[in-house]
Amino acid sequence: MLSAFWIVLKRDLLLALRRRNEVFTVLFFFIVVISLFPMGIGSEEKILIKIASGVVWIAALLASTLALERLFSNDYEDGTLEQMLLTPQSLSIMVFAKIFAHWLLTGLPLVLIAPLVGLFYHIPWESVGVMMLALLLGTPVLSMIGAIGAALTLGLRGGGVLLSFLVLPLYIPVLIYGSGAISASMAEGLSVQPYLLLLFAFMILSVIFAPWATASALKISLE
Amino acid sequence: MTLQVNNLQCIRGDRELFTGLSFELGERQLLMLEGANGSGKTTLLRTLCGLYLQEQGDILWNGKPIRKLDEVYRQELLYLGHYNAIKSDLTALENLRINALLAGEKINHDQLMQALDTIGLFAFEDFPTRQLSQGQKRRVALARLLLSKAKLWILDEPFVALDVAAVELLQKIIAKHVDNGGMAIITTHQEVPLTQGAVKRLRLGATFETAQSDLANA
Image 1: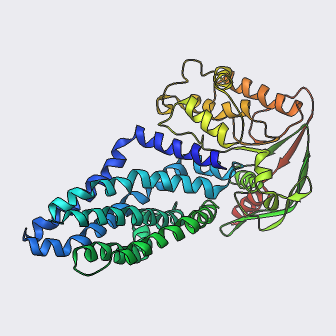
Image 2: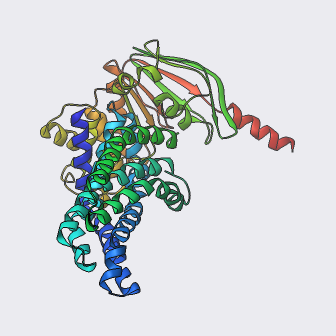
């Protein structure tokens, strides 16, 4: 069971290594969206600090949906997904490995680039730490929920747009508590802890249920 | 070991492809599935794999429904469809290794190289499969047959895109598998000469014939 996880994880990372541009598109999209706001709104420190938490998360949400469609579609088109369904391994485990690889390639870079956002938006350093932690807890949830949507819309024409409609509303709790954590860290007398604990709870829940739901959705999509 | 199909009915969309289909396949038997284009050959094969759910009827492996056996059944099954199921960015060797490992086979590097040599990909092991020809890609997919311990092979048009030498080789591989007590179901227009064992034939296409007579009447 564990071996299936490693095989699929290594496979997906190896594939990403051979097609590096796909990884960088997500990261650059995030950076571009982030840097557009100060240009449009102006570089007044007060306003930027106020909108920073929301902007970071909305950019992360959009960047995450951008990469979702490819999560299963490549494997679907060349028949390897079908073969995965026919292996004597647990599909949920293999799906979990795929989602984890996807997060390593699209979610983790956003966490690591977060200090740059801090610079753009005059965010104090302590809050940058909170922002990174919130992204670290929240982005896996985006990948997990997104995977369910990606599996459900697999093989549909115009699935990409449908996927965004389907998945973005489900991202709202993460958006609220994620940006809440950053705002709380910059406000006086507010504790960050409840926000982060709730994000952690979302992550645990999604890690438990999403691979299983995604596996069921894939079976339906391949029928 | 037996595969038993009872009274199977399959519907794709609004179209009934076949109904009341029954057959049994035992060890050392090869089933040649025949029928015109669109008669439901691929649907039948995918249903037998458990990828499609049948409308009615049972598919039994050793007397138990394949849906219940789940992973136990898939351990015994090797399916090769229209797609080669190989990643174009990975090399032939990497593709074969991943496919074999996921199928639960314990294999080492030498066995992989040996399989690729036998299938005629000597010196092509380390090229990304994107750079290989159609026939060579098919050979990468077929190399799995050499490493597989699965009892039941379900092959959908396995001879497509292969040259004469490869067709002959594949015929031998299938014949050897059946000789060794395996079973195979294939759709093809090529004959597979067997040294031992029995060839069964099944012809789909009642729907196709009725469709034609409808056209004639109109």
